[in-house]
Length: 196
Image (cartoon, rainbow, N blue to C red; front, side, top):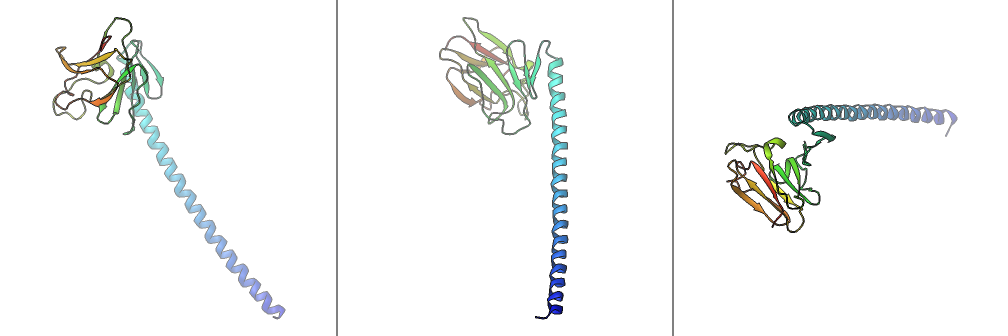
């Protein structure tokens, strides 16, 4: 191969290589732009969700003297009840030891209230409205308590009461469940008992 032919081949290779690099750079810049726009949109949505959650927490705090925010999405009331607000549809059925927990929605989702089990021989009755879980009118989508989980020690129980303090459901075992559809809109109180 002559030197001239070799030089022409080298120039052609450099031109192809330069075009390849330009295309690669354009694709890389476009990819980064897409990633950044998605990240900014997600951050903006997250910030909006945080602001709306904070407004919900502030409203509950204003209605409950002595309550305090203990986490980004949690309020601790002076009586030991912890309320967790969740944006997630999959908050999960987590409930601390020696606690009785209730959720607004089926499948252990939505607003959660965690009640301490009774101590000694002093039963305690809690008004669900105070914690953002008021009874509703039958047929409402968001009302009352739907899911529950018990992690109380043996010998302790809880019961759901209606507005007239009549028993709707008694829980005297560990585990979880759901309020019967005919009763979940009527639950107004949780009664923590020191007996099975």
